[in-house]
Amino acid sequence: MIKKQEGFRIYEYILFAGITFLVFILCVSVGSVSVPLKDIFTIIWNSVWGIPIPETIASPSIILSVRLPRVICAALTGASLSLCGGAMQGLLRNPLADGSTLGVSSGAALGAAIAIAFGITMPSLPFAGTMVMAIVFAFVSLIVILTLAYKMDFSLSTNTIILIGVIYSMFVSSILALIITFAPDKVKHITFWTMGSLSGSNFDNALVLLFALVIFGGGIVLHARELNAFAIGEENALHIGVNVKRVKLLIMIFVSGLIGVCVSIGGSIGFIGLVTPHIVRMITGPNHKRLLPASLFGGATFLMLADLVARVLLNPLELPIGVVTSFVGAILFVYIFYTSRRKTHA
Image (cartoon, rainbow, N blue to C red; front, side):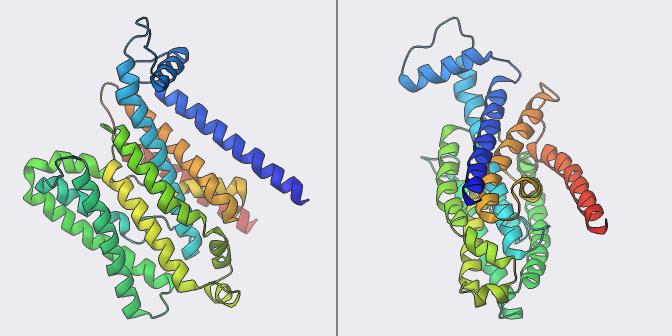
């Protein structure tokens, strides 16, 4: 029986990886200028090995400089946000939790908006000012929320953390509105960014996202066993040897760091961390050793398709990717919630 389960898991992940790869190729190929699949593979292969690209292939720069880094960033951002959502749902034992539940997303968005409004940059890395501010504010937000939660409840209970996170998000939203009011020349940029956008993404952004996913995401995946223990309650997890406060704090730190990087590059992109783990859980079950890795593939696939829709739906205009994810995610979430309620009462 164990061997069959292991074989099924391997097959399952091969299937997830295959679907993600096919969606990746589709998103690189389709756009304002469609490029044949044969040319896509030729461009990528020749670029990797330093072989001159045939002159018969039109606009290779569109693929290499624009579309390829953007799709890679969409995949990595989607994977990261989905992983954070799955971790937070397991940690807080709340199906409505995701990376924004703590208020960390709002904090990261505030930091990035301040960087945009006041032109905070680093000469060698133009995007680093926004990124550093987003990450710093994400961690500051985490410290503020945990400090307030600890003052109210020494046990750092789930309900207290969620309550403080919601209140903190509302507070940050008011500050963000104030910044927009006092930076009228940056209103369009900040507003479009807060709705989420991966336009202008480059390979440097992709490399930072990959590094963050490996470091922070790896830390989350390594705590899958502890997240399984949280499913039976914090007291029971404590009784079987889990250091509840330490694990909770570590996972929150990993989630905050990963969200900070994602928000600094792609802006505020909602519903990925909320909906994707639900869909994946229907396939893999609640075991976080299977759920978290599968959520990586699910989130990557979802956001790549959402970015594709944002690029081509109203071509030549481009929709903010957050609008697409919120629209699709809201419908999916209502459907999932409705079907789960019917099964519960059946």
